[in-house]
Amino acid sequence: MAEIIFDVRKPESDSEWQAYFQCRWEILREPWDQPKGSEKDEHDADAYHVMAVDHDNGDVIGVGRIHFNSPAEAQVRYMAVKEEARKHGIGSLILTQLEQYAIKHGAKKIMLYARENALDFYLRRGYFSQGPAHNLYGKIPHFSMTKTIEK
Image 1: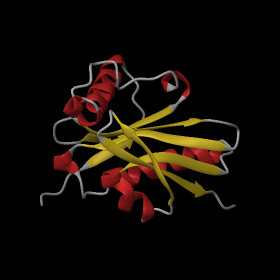
Image 2: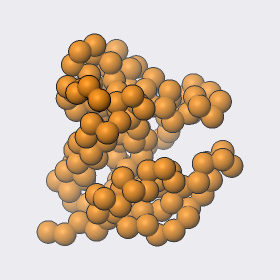
Image 3: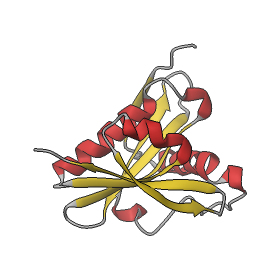
Image 4: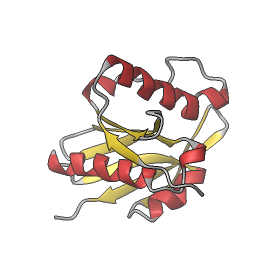
C-alpha cells in the first residue's frame, strides 16, 4: 500500500467548500442514488468542518463535521474517507480534530450515528455503542454511539 501524504484542515475558499461537499456527496450519498444537496443539512452553517487533502494532487480524500446539540453535547456527522485512501490514519486524524474542537468548546459528551461498517473504527477510538438507531434510506443500518469526555 503506497503511503498517502495529506493534511487535515478547515475548508476556506469557495473551491475548497465545493470540493468538500462534493467528496461528502460522492462517498455518503451518490452510492445510494441520493440527489446533490442531500449531503447538506441545517447544521452546516454552525458546524465545524475539516477535510483531508492529498498533497500529491490536491484532492479532498476525507471529510468530517461536528456541531453542538446542546452546550454539553456535540455530534459528529458526515465522516467519510474515500475507499482508496482508507487505512492511512486519515479518519482517525479527522475525528481527533473534530473531538479537540468539541472539547475546546465545552463538550462533555460526543455522540454520533455510525454505519455498521464503521462500528469497529469508533469502538477503537473510545466510543460505546448504544445499540441500533435507524436504517438510512431503509438500507444502511446505523448505531447510536457516545463518548464521554473526561477532564
